[in-house]
Image (cartoon, rainbow, N blue to C red; front, side, top):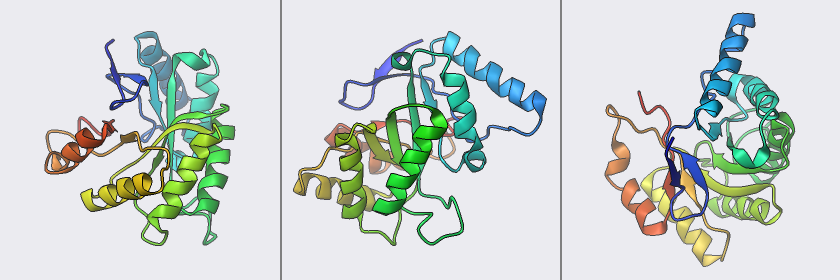
Length: 210
């Protein structure tokens, strides 16, 4: 397995990561297959495991946490995300300070870890100021709950604005983005790749096989 730095930063991840978006936890056979997949990936050098609070209604995080506890914490990189509704309440979604802190704590508990290596804004939240979101993510890095943070599926304008706010307010820098990228969908080649290169931001695509 080959490993690459996440952007200009020191964190190194395997060229192939294992995602949890399509994890099927319905039935014993599906669970056994998911468990075997995680162990097979790890045994072959995969050190990057990606998840999100909303995958399988939170069950994917719990399942992944049960699997990763068998491995030495320093040997793997685990990520999660926040944005999508996790309950019926008006504050149980989005990228507000309240929701991010509450969901980060829930993700840490589900994954049975003291910190996340990577933490993503799963989508853009038009109802929350970008400066509020960037501030709380910077605060969570300072608190040691996350090591690196980034965004997923933000537009070039949204990404550029976030980077400007981070620099203007001397916040902890954004380190990574997670866009869809494959032979059928190459939109990040237009502007986003250049923005990331200029700012040392890593790109960890999802759905690389479409």
